[in-house]
Image 1: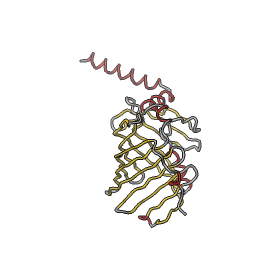
Image 2: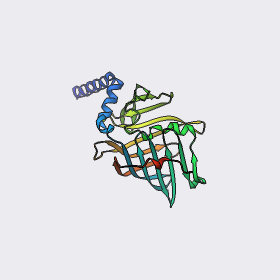
Image 3: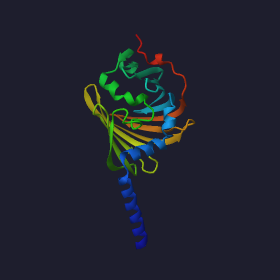
Image 4: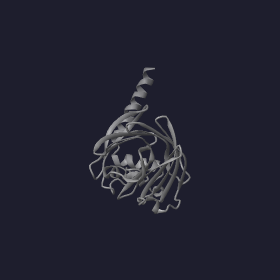
Length: 238
């Protein structure tokens, strides 16, 4: 029994040493390969996602349109009322009748900046150097029983996000970020699970739980790639 314990302890130490020996680029390369690889991600020009959202006891249906590098549009329906949020590289706007916004209202500049990765499939770690970001390994931390690898990513504006990767799959299982909303800093946290390989070969989480002052659970029900999307849907109504 003591010998078995010694063997397992040795394996654990070897595993730990191996993880520490990896460079941040090696870890990121394994992550990109795990979610489909650069070739698959680079071929994705658009994505349309249907999902169910649970927010503070209420259930909404939503549809998201992403035109890679050009625009993000989310339409959520709550009891017949449609909430629309749009972000592009240069602007953002929202219609939210629940908050009295029946006409399109521009989003604050800080929110637009903080949402730029919304139309960048592959995530912030994909081609991070080309985006002007810097990455570094930041140790390990337990995420729901997984001794996750932590990557600290600093973008060109100095904003920091922390990614937690499962060392067995190299999927991102958690992301933390500090963003500015209406001039105030807010820390947001999202956990990802129920990973599935789509028909195009891209692996994505079908369940996301986001904490941003309140909890939102998103369950994807359908996803389509490379459908034609009219860029005009991102234009702010006048």
